[in-house]
Amino acid sequence: MPWMVAVGAACVVCAAVIAGSRGLKHFDAALLYYAIGSVLAAAAVAYRFTVWAQRPPSRMYFKRGLELLLRRGTGRLPAVALATADKIVAQNFIRRRSVYRWVMHLCLSGGCTLAFAITFPLVFGWVHFAPLTGDAETYRVMVLGFGVDSFHVAGVKAFVMFNLLNLSALIVLVGLIMAAVRRFTDAGERATQKFWEDILPLLLIFAVTATGLMLTVSYKFLGGRGHSLIAVVHLVSVLALLFYIPFGKLFHMFQRTCSLCVSLYKKAGARGPRAHCMCCGEDFASRMHVDDLKTVPD
Amino acid sequence: MNDALEFFIDPSRCIGCQACVQACGECDTHRGTAMIHLDYVHRPTGVQTTPVVCMHCEDPTCAKVCPADAIKQDEQGVVLSAAKPRCVACSNCVLACPFGVPKMQTSFDLMMKCDMCYDRTSIGRKPMCATVCPSGALFYGPRDYVEKFRREQPVNEFQFGAQTVRTKVNMMTAPGVKALPFDVADFLPFEALDEDPLALARAGAPDVADAAVWHELHDPKAELELICE
Image 1 (cartoon, rainbow over the protein chains, first blue to last red):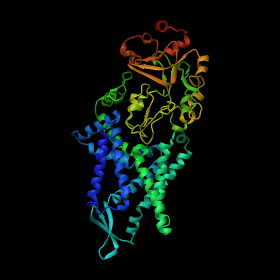
Image 2: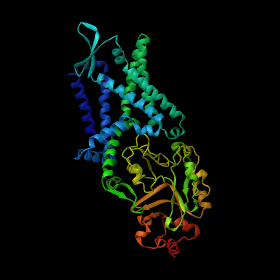
Image 3: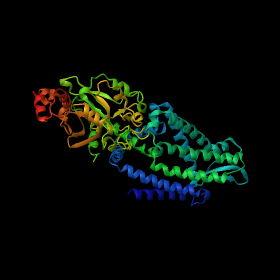
């Protein structure tokens, strides 16, 4: 089943690329390797996610989460929306653990999300820029083949558009510096950190960020010197990062979906029958949780 | 980590001073939050306390029930606290641990538990609690030392109903006991049972260590009779 899901995910991405780029009409051939890497990474993420979601404890939460979501009654969708805003967007649980870590994580996750949100549509041919007929200095923003906006190449909007990736790289760099300081100075983290789990993802993100910024430096300030070499290194680092995601620490961004099921589960458990300690009578969990848990270990 | 050093808990030596609780909060991996607590061994019959730390099971139930792969075991068998990026605060581990060790820090959305002071033991130093324990209830050192100087015997096998749990941490108990049995009946309220609390005492958990100190007996049956007298 994981293989089938992986192949299915790859097919969906390929279909989305073909459809979104209007039959590859707007697909940029220069970005072909990025597109291939993205398709393979999507398959790998789907494979890993399916394997993980089939483990008894994760399956229990996803099964119950879906059941609760589809159950008649009110308050499920607002609860999921609230949990998404709180746990995935604002990441308030990290703020309560440490404000430093929260700022660091927001920089890393926010910067990377912004970068992915820009690059994937460009790589897949969903977004491209086309000059207006008769006015080469005005660009139209084409989304899925439809013109949605236009701007002058010398305007503020153009500056922002063309530098959003650089901005995201700078945000990520701030997060990386904070993470590096923490990894070097926090005695607890130094004791428990592992190269594969904790250091490698930071190195990969740094490689992508640094080479991405170097491309801008090369064509803006060095007359394109070393651009081809940097472009190749950037490509390699991006592909390495994409393939690391499903098999390393960064997979936790997908595992966080389970916390939404946990939120629904806890909410339903708080309203339902409770389990009480046989010794002191204290209410310690929901009856549903205790009963479900007995089926998990074996 | 030095494989020659092991962790031993001797409830009969605990004097309830809470030095271990204070020292635990100083550990770098969970600064400010103590991951050890004291439990009464058998409150209806006495005030004897015992320190409760993670027993570091060979096949940790907490890790098996974790939906997010947040609980990892290192090569030496130390079961680490929940990985911060992964823990989804579901409390599965809290409910499933046979020893009642993991604690859910609801304000952090994070499970935290004793990791045997990983920052210290991974470089061959003693855990904080064992460093400060004045009575030797928590001891971190070579097994031959314990066998030579203690009358009790280390056991690392526990029977919870049908589940046998083997642990990295040793519990000191009466000589001759191979596995410590735990039964829900040991912890039921006496009022509900309408029986004499002392009549419920039996060889094995939770008061066998106490018996081992005061009565040098090797026969569990004779021990049981003595306790029930």
